[in-house]
Amino acid sequence: MIHPQAILAPDADIAADVAVGPFAVIEAGATIGPGCRIAAHAIIKRGAKLGAGVIVDHFAVVGGDPQDLGFDCNLASGVLIRDRTIIREHVTIHRATKAGGDTVIGSRCLLMAGAHVAHDCILGDDVIMANGCMLGGHVHVGDKAFISGGVAVHQFCRIGGGSLTSGNAVITEDVPPNALAHGRNLLAGLNLIGLRRRAVPATAVAEIKRAYHAVYATHGACATLAQVALATNEYTTLEGKEFLNFFLGGKRGRFASPE
Image (tube, rainbow, N blue to C red; front, side, top):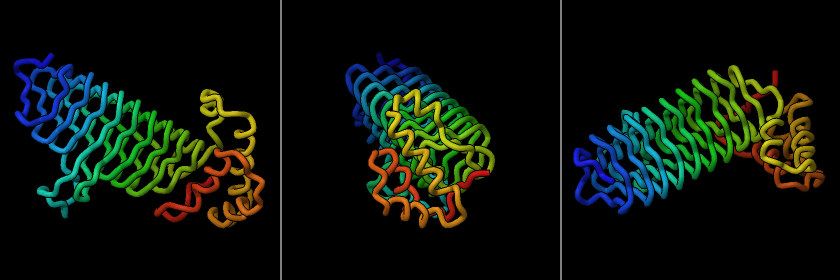
């Protein structure tokens, strides 16, 4: 049901069963998939594309211009939010800075109240961002990562899948997959509880542990140590290989290190 006081552009593409609350705004060029719910006072900007069953709560803004002084507001870009993601109150998600590009939020994500996703970020599936999290531009977040309240993530960082970042952490370096991050670029081991909850096989968990120690137990460049470990061909699980391969990419230089 669309409230009569909702403000909808005539050429916005809105599925027939979408619910839109009073004073919500859906701009021209926005696409709203079936089963979506847009709460009162939410704003869906041009170029935003919502999949099926997406919920956008009160005062959230999806598709706002990047906070970049050099950005040309006439450039056409957007935000893509995949199926069954929940966007809570006052969340802001900014559109991409590249023509035709999208800031991407995966399926079944939960962005809690006041979270911010800057331009060109890419979030995988089942990501949870707690209240007041802030992602700088071009941040990549892997599947099933959990970012606790008040966390600030520097632009171009990577947050590995399955990792947990504790509240109010400051992240300016990459967080490895399935790791526990806290403070300022500190690790506290692996997210073993998360691995258990996701029913990751014991053989894979054992390899992740071995890979973690291979990278961090001795002093040296993480990327080099990861290459040495991979060259042994002793890692056979996808999870173990993914942990090591994570260190071979990225733009932030040195990776988060243990205390």
